Image 1: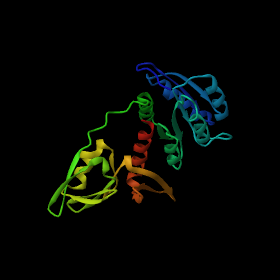
Image 2: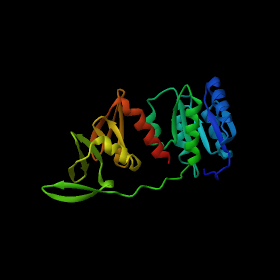
Image 3: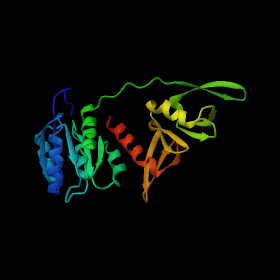
Image 4: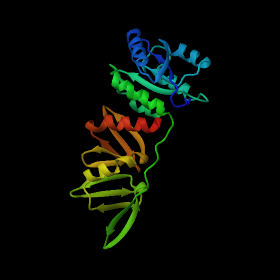
Length: 244
């Protein structure tokens, strides 16, 4: 559902634990961007409410008796104008599933007010997309010949001493620029560090895999390991991309 700019949001909070439900509703009511806050402790009851009411967003727990939060989100995704979905949970393990369901955000309990405010900001943004940066031409040399790659063709970048190796579906090329410099210059184009020696283009991420607490991404048919240090940031960026 799309709300005109400046109009307060109507949100529905769903959590089977009453203290958590009351706390989340209290924090949302403190946000000036939020108007009406509806609550229920049952995903099944929430579904009945949503058949009759129009809400801009649902803030829901994942692990609930009966219909789970993930199952409810799957149903909502079939609505003609589905509300934005924000998962609020004590468990990190469902982040990939949330990303697959195009959740706007994934907030961990205990909920901090400033973190919840960020989730509300993402809901307010709705489907508004930022203007994409121009597709930069990147000069690379091979055998004394300079050619130009479109940055959008690059799937990932690997540190190579003082150079960076640019990977594309057609092959790889060395660029006389450190990885740290490209990380800063290309961040606005969707390149993010997943390891001390790797940047990936979010546009080329085909899969996110979680196994035994380890995260990896599939880019151009190649599986790349994400360091623990960068896992949460990558997850947040992918969720933001999915909800933008």
